[in-house]
Length: 243
Picture 1 (cartoon, one colour):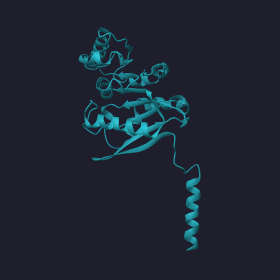
Picture 2 (tube, one colour):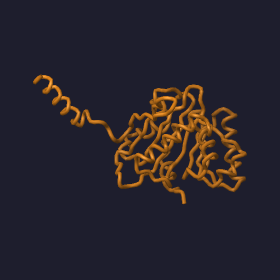
Picture 3 (cartoon, one colour):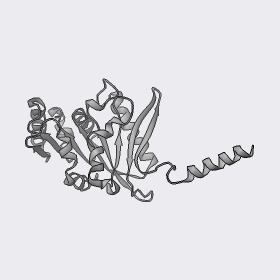
């Protein structure tokens, strides 16, 4: 009996030790409870998070290669790597949501995967002190398509968007022309994807928008590594706020 009590006390001490305590900032593994079961995802909480202060947030939509149900693949491509780039994680000021699309799924607005991403956003807003006027949307490849789609479906949500290496539907340009947009692509990407980005940017301009467009020279489909380590991207995000 005494031995069991000692073991219990040791466990309590270890749990209270900083090496064993549950992390509250950085990349956190989370679960969204749904009627279809548990959905794993990752949430990046800024290391300098202060509950009394409102914080900006980025919703990141991954590409087709990161689909699945482990919850962790989306962090391994794109903005997750950029957060860790050159040790800048400690000072990265944004919350970042990394939802995961199911195998065979897409980020198109109105699909179950897109709806779950928005549900995770809603939960995060309830749990943390998020600035609702500084919520940003970005994604790469399939996630770039999702960025255009969710922007058109919910233009009132996003302070700015940054779709990467995928064009949107030009017919939706009038819906999103007033959302600050910075689109990225590599000039050696597939002709279809490259033309899709150029066409969408032109459609926004024709509709009266003022999108930014960066085309990286000698870069193929993986333009996201270059885009997400562009320092100005994050200051550009923060320069935009919903009225």
